[in-house]
Image 1 (cartoon, rainbow, N blue to C red):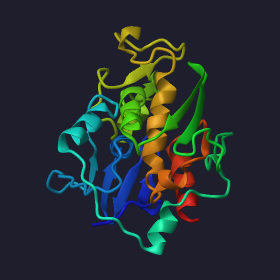
Image 2 (cartoon, rainbow, N blue to C red):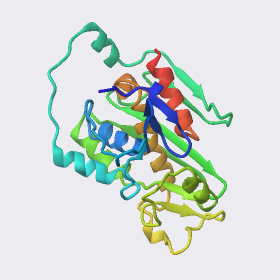
Image 3 (cartoon, rainbow, N blue to C red):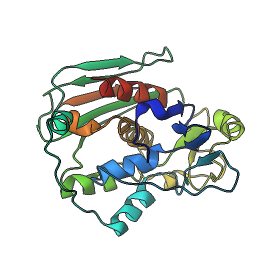
Length: 260
């Protein structure tokens, strides 16, 4: 078994891909988000691939994390015996210093953590904003609390249902990259340059009419940051501001966090 770590990330174009040797698994962020959002700290994930396949993509399902959340709930949760070693206790302690990472792609995007800044010391406050020419600015301020039943229910209701989205201009790039193999207009929102939904999609499909895009970016952010060991234990009590997050930026922040 290989523990999750930012160093396993081999690609961040359009999705997060993990690689070990010649074997790769793409689009892992939805499943990882659902795990941590459901309060799961430890899990063994087994993936079946077609014979001879070196790269597999996690099922896109409905384009959100909801079906993952439902599947995890059907399996149940079990408490692990406590590890009281000093190394583990240090890993679970909230980070006591600020941390900022700028987008490695050179945009003005960044992720910044401020310790002790959350109104509730038992949550990690997320302030996520995205800006797209077709959609304008969307912003979500939301407290992430996977340690309580109420917090897990909030994740299942507020974040998990938000579906992946793209723009009409990116469809060919997705297909060329071999991603969204199971994708269709039924499990992804596709926006045109004017901000309208593509083809026969209608606004009735939107689960969050005002801000589904930023909610999905929050879903992705949670999943990608999980690459850092005990990420949200370390970010607990603080505020994470993510401006224009994407997989490359998310993974860079996870790597910086893991290095502390």
